[in-house]
Picture (spheres, rainbow, N blue to C red):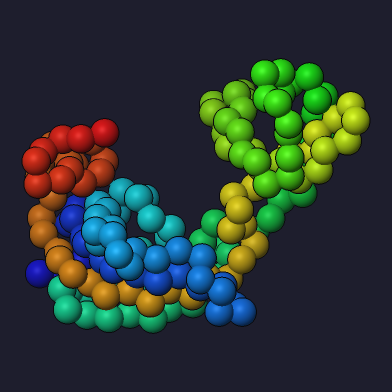
Length: 160
């Protein structure tokens, strides 16, 4: 069966940046399962996997526009330090969930001053060219429940 919209795909993958630094991998874990066509993975990888089948291997370089997007400097801002009440020590690299008009958003602390904290709402991989090595393990039709929920379910059924 070929990978197409509304199929559940299981892949093993390795993700590196342009310098060859390992960013993520499924090695030592279960394969990543996703619902093709439901925006469960980045657009560039989904396009590269379209039409492939179990046993296929793919190596693809994905530019930021088809990955996690370009960096947007408007998504970086200074906020009052008191917004982090209850946190013993705010440090660069820490991540927090912020409530925005568009809903919950993860922000990363970039800088800490005496009165303010600079946070960045860009995805950590925004602006990064991504290199994927992917082995397709399985492709199957999605169940009606998986299609309704927009994601695959494990062998034991629905789990969140």
